[in-house]
Image (cartoon, rainbow, N blue to C red; front, side, top):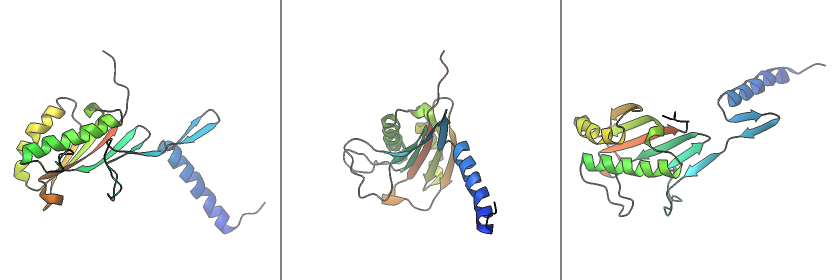
Length: 167
């Protein structure tokens, strides 16, 4: 049996792709069954995201990727006043998405914060510590020149479902 050059090059690629998908958990084998994990859009009940060019959160298997969020009150659409109020509102908004996915702040493993003024770092931490009192996730804080709607900060998260040890 002979293979063309194209066939000989394609076979290792297909094998590597399969190994990658298996190792990354996107394909899981159970006996003879193979299942492909689907992505699921997570949004809050009663919200219309059809006009947005992104999803509030995407769940793939046990992983949840939460888009950047600013401190907008979902009931009024108004941006909260001041860094502490915006921080609290952002964390409440993201907490509602976590809850919708069957998770909470204990599931958060990575947080990225964008601040328009790095001088607001201490005020951010004052509120943030209340949501992550212990076993805090990994975090990056970056100063940016400007955010949508004049927000003072934007926060995105990554969370994962895992079994908590029973005490």
